[in-house]
Length: 392
Image (cartoon, rainbow, N blue to C red; front, top):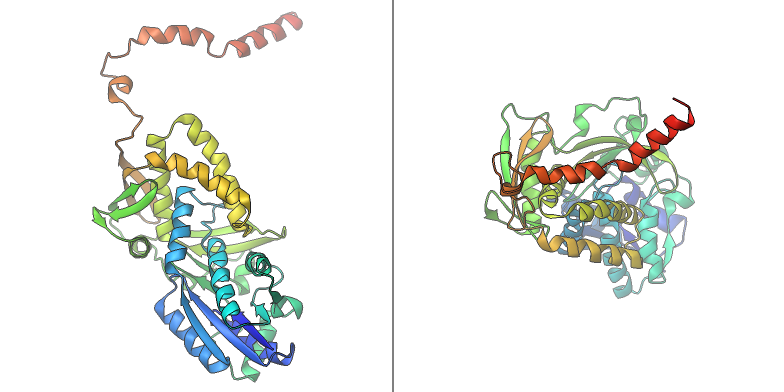
């Protein structure tokens, strides 16, 4: 029997290789690493470990597909409880590539290294089940602990650089880096600085960046046009030097469990901040109000890993319609972990200086008096009625 394993090269997926043979009776384990912008060294390391510990290994490039999903996220201002969805939106992209290999290899099953307490099991399996594959989840089915995995890895000569002193689970891709596990699980524990890799405490001098958007999609930094992958990568480097994009939060997982999560996402913070600011310039009040409801639903659908649900396409259809006018630029000021929009421009701007400025007379201010007479009318009537009923 043959099984295809979604392989990151870390502790969980590495111990799955011998487990799938010892506990599940598979004759052949095929590992697949999907490149969605994680560091090249990580991809290379996973490839080396896959070839060393498994019977066959594939590395699949899905950067293009992932960036396309990130563009949808930017247009939707993707944010779940303060989390920019880097891992969530990556899982279905990875899963689709795993399925492609499983079909080509005529595999009997697909396996993953997710636990039974997290969200990723749901995101992966939703896609795997869609294509009718048997799914194996050793971490969940064998009820394994991270401490047990570390010992098991040692016994089988598997070296993944994880120790009991630093048992962190790290997930990194183009959009975000997450760190969890060990003492970090305690909400009252202050994380040490060494958990951070992308961000530092911040430069002493601020920096202003100009971000250009076309129909909601970022296309240039300081007037230099770039493809999506390079643009996001560049902003991660610039923002990280200013300490931008750290999130330490309590997160409500799909299962209802609360979990402490630590993330780094400089480019995501910069782009979503700038994109929201540009929308405020070009979208109408009611568009902005309704879009907030759509964004909340969009973020939850992505967080739950349900991007194959019809609602996802429907939400994107509305969002894409609003983005037809989200073209222009925003300048943001980066300093000591903060991102502050300081200037913006668009040919579709709904701001009209002649109407708004205190120094113009285009609009006769006396016209506002009639509106003011009726504004708040029902509230005033209510107060009068209560006053009469109380006999005041």
